[in-house]
Length: 81
Image (spheres, rainbow, N blue to C red):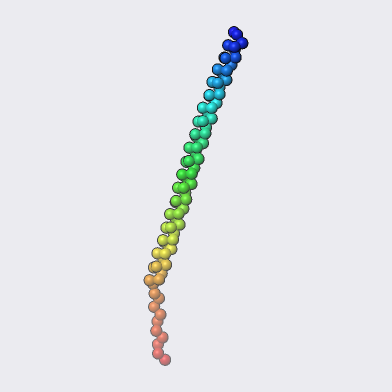
């Protein structure tokens, strides 16, 4: 085999390996982007659930206050002396 053929063979092998590694790196990068997007959505979901929970607590507290304000305690009249 001539030195040029050996060199060409080595270049082809190196190029195939480079392409394989590059494709693997692209897949890893894309998977990481998907994971990050999923985590962001989960964080948004948790934040929305927390917001709704707090709003419900506020509504419940206001409803209790309204009910308490409706109540009256009868104060008995003192008998005349």
